[in-house]
Image (cartoon, rainbow, N blue to C red; front, side, top):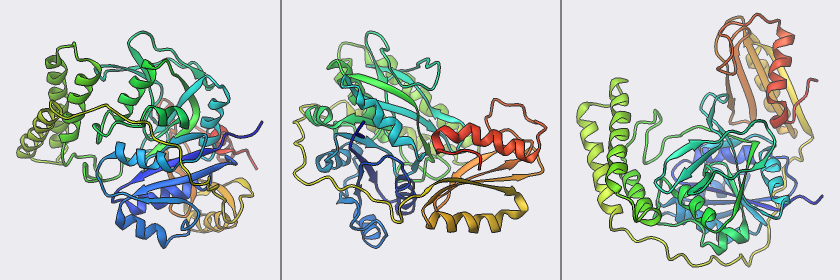
Length: 413
């Protein structure tokens, strides 16, 4: 069966290093037919022009701090039958797009969403959820790894995450794309609710996985301490006016205030801010709510299909396959150098480094393009496992390869 041509859209603003890492990961995808569309601020656009991706991707300069408007710019340039979105501070597993795009082989599927792993590279940040017109989320029970179309029930939509979602391009364009009234926060929720209102069907694809890092931005620091919560307040107020105009907004906004204050207090207790910062940031929330009460929304015109050709991304050098390297912690320098060398030759490399400890495991995707997992030989990887598990080296390597093999295209050598 012919693979669905996909446009992978990345919006990046002020994070050129994260963007380069994201593009390195996208460049290792095993899907045979995709293009990369990057919507980027002027400074990072210059970095792109000087990188190895110059001329191989579609790069669109865009300096407005509005993720919905930026995504629409990317959509206007996307020539794929499907369009997939990933954040610049995320990296996809090599099989991500193949699994995600396969959902569109069913002609009745209009959208698809996968799973998102968090900062430790192992625990899930998001899996399957539904959302209602107030923005309230609820977990969806997905019994296995098989993709499936989910019906969350009346008044609810399947919630896709902006860093791991895809849509049939024509459907998204006809809807007008993302609503720029949601400059940040609840932008995907608004789209999910609009898709549900049109009777569109969304598939959950558990094996379509990305790793999301929550990099620093103009809205938050690297430790996730907010710089402002204005957009959270504004987007929540707009969502209520747009999707729940008959409801009383006061209880929802009161809960939002309580949630945001509790979050800021946790940061304060952790030493990341002072009491006066809590008050200052809560004032930005109130300013956002006031702005959202009057901000215009909707009225989206259809986004025309692009006139430009599909720019198929070709890996350079061509990929030769996926391989595994493993060793002890004291062998790290040599193995990292060997892993980077093999990536440069066209291999997808997973490197396992184990120390004689019970340290928890972490997975990172390095700047050189290596999937590196490090931790104790007897420590837990999945956080639900026992804190200590006796294991020999070969058995532990086999266990971890089995854990990631289906998303990493990996088998024991």
